[in-house]
Image (tube, rainbow, N blue to C red; front, side, top):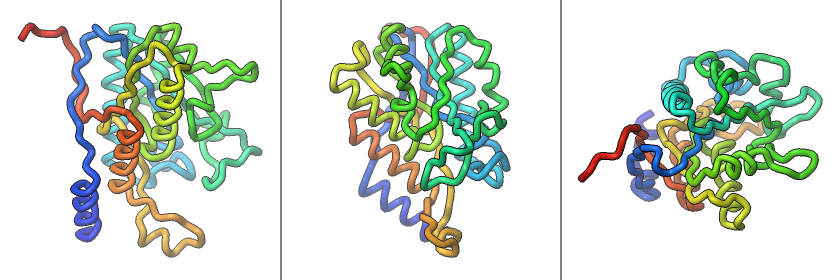
Length: 247
C-alpha cells in the first residue's frame, strides 16, 4: 500500500491534471452525460465486472451522479444516460460476459432508476465500450449527435464509469467529432473527476491469474483524467449551481 501511494504521488507530480471548479448558472446550455452507471459496474456482487466489496471511489461517483441528475431534472436541463447492455452471444473481449440484456446488471443503479420517468432524460443502451459509436443507428444517424443538436448544447458534463475505459473512449470520440464540425454548437467537453470512477484489480491479484492485466484503481483513474485533458477535455474537481452574482 505504501509503494502504491508513493507511485500515485509520483504520477501526480510528473503528470499533473490541473482542475478547477465548475459553476452552472444556466447561462450556457449544458447537457449532463452519465456513462454506464449501472448495476453491473457499480453494485456490489452484481456480475463479473461489479465490485466485490463496497468501493469508496465508485460510491462517490454514484452519489455525485445522483446529485447532479437531481438538479438537472429539477431545472429540466437535458440529460443523456448510457446503459451498457450486451447480448449473451456477442462477446466483448477482453472482458468476460457482463451487463447482459434482460438482466438487472444492465439497469441503472437503484439510486438513479427514477431517471426512466423524467421527460428531459434520454436513455441509450449501448453494446460497445464507446458510447459515441454505440449511439449509431442502422440508418447511420447518431442518437447522441441528434441530442446535442436538438437541445443546442454548448457544453457536455460527463460523469460515470470507467474513467479510463468507457468514459475516456466516449470523451475522445466526442472531441474528435466536435473538431470535425459534426457536433455544432458543442464547444466544451467537461469531465468531472469526482463524478467518475474505475475498477480496482491490484497487481498482487492479477499476477496469479493467467493473462490478467493489473488495473490499480487510483493510478488508472488519474491516467484516464490525464489523457482526457490531453485530448482537449476540461477536467473539474467540483460542480455547483446557482444564479450568477455580480462581482
